[in-house]
Length: 148
Image (cartoon, rainbow, N blue to C red; front, side, top):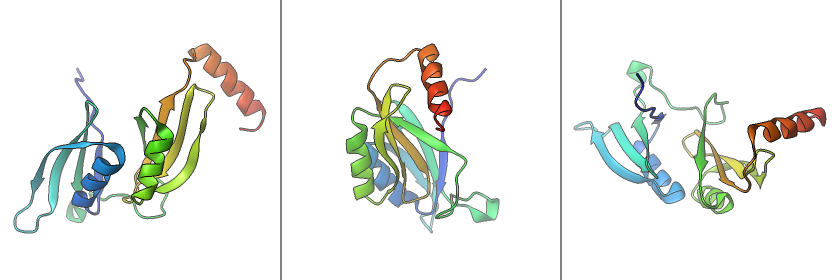
């Protein structure tokens, strides 16, 4: 039986990533384990409003690598916030790259996309209306009929 699911990110500079996530997204560091004497971040946990994000520095000798700058990614993290526009602007001011500005979406959310300075992709949004799955499908069908 599964009890929880924790996203676990690997980055090139864990200490800098923690600072970025605290400043950009309001995360709170719970703890970190560092390797003596190098200080390499072996493990850290951050609280994102009741959800835990784990992260570590890269360990190339164990094939644990973060995303490469400019390379595509197969994972996005969705951050549900009070004000997507403000969080996106703050993240960009702190070094994130804007991939898609905030806009109202068919599924009842206003959101946009940033890539953090460590290569991870974040969908950032807030609710603007409650949409049933049936209405969401109807809107999705209409959007796809228009060519997306």
